Picture 1 (cartoon, rainbow, N blue to C red):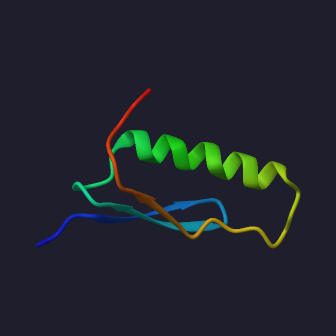
Picture 2 (cartoon, rainbow, N blue to C red):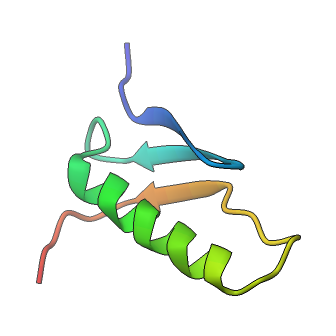
Length: 60
């Protein structure tokens, strides 16, 4: 069984999180929340976040 996908619902967005190195971490979820904040602040009713892919584990 592979645990590389997770679904996250935040407001009107339903996002699929995908991580090549295992289950998506809390860092990925925090990054998604920041992405959604910027999308919602853009005032575009048609903008949607659909999928976030995490391929390499590096933090700076």
